[in-house]
Image 1 (cartoon, each protein chain N blue to C red):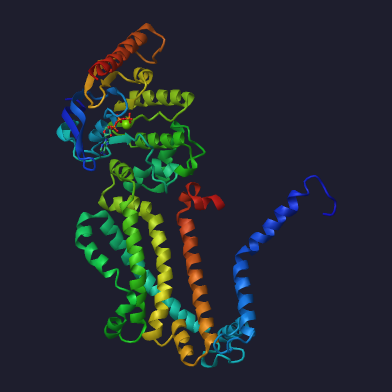
Image 2: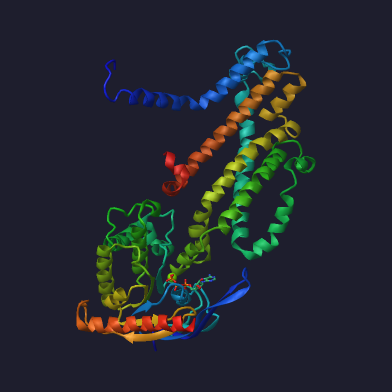
Length: 258
Length: 283
Ligand SMILES: Nc1ncnc2c1ncn2[C@@H]1O[C@H](COP(=O)(O)OP(=O)(O)OP(=O)(O)O)[C@@H](O)[C@H]1O
Ligand SMILES: [Mg+2]
């Protein structure tokens, strides 16, 4: 039994104002095994966030079944940590209170909350900013708070929507390494949305390429290059060439169709 | 500072604006009062109809401190009168805040409450609070209760409307984030929706405290025999326009102070907002 099973997922947004329906996800079938690190690649607007929202339980698929650990997803839950495309922090809470928010909901005492959250603060390199409000931090810092928040929940499934998009190259590299280390240590299942082929190949052991809207799965590529990965190695480049050709085929197919 | 240096031209201008900044809020009142005093003394209207500011100040002084009994039975009783009004304002406002926020959050959050409760409340809203006076008097008699009831009516709807708006405009991604972290229904309201709606709720509370003062005076004119509004109306019967004006000033001042207090609480509570708002620029 896979950790996440997507069966014939179709998502149609009904656009009442414009009086038409928008087919966003068209028959998605995907099995994600426990401890998989899946990177989801696809053009903007193809439905990557929508797919993540369905796994998270924020949205219901129009038809199809979504199973996490064998159970039908009906609502959000703390077994699935989400890093949103926008940071989505509580603006009235400081960084550390945002990170430890789920502990507060569980009724954990403040001292212990802070104790445990401090570790995550260090993990994302925000020591010294733990008592800053989101409005007092940069976009990239807020995004890191969001990442720390999801990681502290220690969920079995982590859903990340372009979490490193707002970070500089240096911080991005560090965070990628941290994430891989955490994933190896905790053996959690990660679904990671990105626009960058390189990022997908550095992180993932399964790369899922989606087509332009309506989103379908073009191909799911297994990629088991040992870590740390050498991005100049021939294996890396072969995989990159393959992924890029999938994306290129897609755009020529669209060009011919139109 | 007698020698002229290179930086000298900039500094006097800077100091002038600094000095002006403390006084700027006084400019308009001073000009108004000086004009009024001059007009009153010119004798174009009999002093009984338009007392000079000095006369009003005199009346107010005696009302507060009771030095020469120019305000007769009110002499020295200002504190008692102000307290009577303030307690009604506080009572009605507190009740309105509590129920307004509760009903507003319920209506904003739950379709059920929106469907069942909101139409009735929205129909009651356009009825002027003053028009409840006859009913208030037969229901509650002549005492504090009808006054508090009127204050409540005036303060309730601004709190209600702003609470509904605040809850309805909460970023739904915050709600999703809360659900993702395992918030139950109650926690969703107390830990996410309520704090997120707070800026809007405070806007409602500030409008409400103004309405509260307006209505306590109205109520005291008809339904009670104490308070600043009662003094105002009573003095009118005796053609003591100086006391009428002193009462008006007292109400304005207390209303202003209530708003300042509320603003201070708001600034403390919403400190997190300051870095992103226009208001935060100044501080
Ligand atoms: N709530 C919604 N209502 C209507 N249409 C929606 C809604 N959410 C998304 N869509 C539509 O669904 C499509 C897919 O959106 P989605 O956000 O999943 O794209 P994405 O692949 O995450 O894109 P990006 O890489 O730019 O983030 C878009 O065309 C968008 O307009
Ligand atoms: Mg997206």
